[in-house]
Image 1 (cartoon, one colour):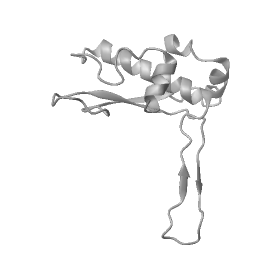
Image 2 (cartoon, rainbow, N blue to C red; image 1 turned 60 degrees about the vertical axis):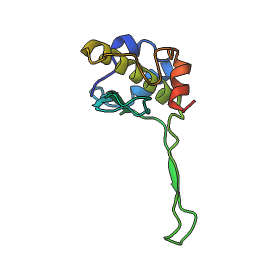
Image 3 (tube, one colour; image 1 turned 90 degrees about the vertical axis):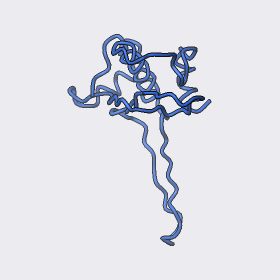
Length: 132
């Protein structure tokens, strides 16, 4: 768990910084979890590692709607992920932080598989999050 480092926090908008300031000062922004295999399928059978980036300061809110009194009918769940500027900016910064950690720890032994080293801008990173 960590606060975003200053080098990444500097890229956040004033709106996002204000939203993050609503959390306790010692509240972490991210949880970074190394996992033994990637979320994206690889073309070969090699071993891969990745980081799961968990936002701990989410501003987006979803909802659950119950449309029937029949318990056999599932509720409608709207997760509403990344619907606020703050969540999008922190998610991108968290992804950049995971890249920094992968480079700093020396666990990288080959090219980035997903989304790939060619994905660099905030817009490209968000598009990759959305499955584009």
